[in-house]
Image 1 (tube, one colour):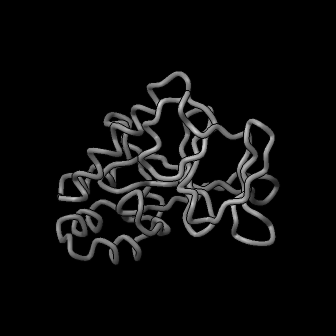
Image 2: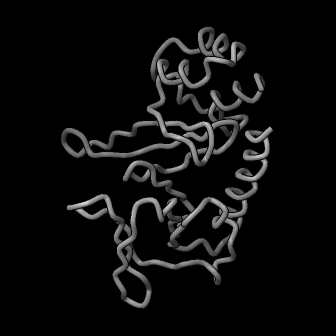
Length: 180
């Protein structure tokens, strides 16, 4: 029940953020703040982690530098409406929120090649895991339908991030939705 309610709350929140032409760089202290009107949001200029601690350093529009404990920041939203979640002192970009949340993190690899790694969580406030077979099977071990669909459909580690162009979503989220 809670999971369905969470999806019913998060999907409109993310859609609302994207629908607004006035997305802004702002701090999110909890996922509910995504739906706050831009004029009432906590606007920021920059955000990042301290190199000495896991504290988060925020530069505000009035040029103040604020140091916040990691637990005080759920995430942030960029001007392009992208939303990032803070988990274990790392920011994860939300790619899609549905029956599970799919995240990505980009890093530079050899010769400045961009490498994207995908992660997932069961909700916006639960642990984030690397998107792989072992983690999916562990986190959804009580959902026999979903596990069977994973076995049948996905043969390669790259299959887990297959994007369904027609449905405009990650196939893995569609499969989980069918098995709920």
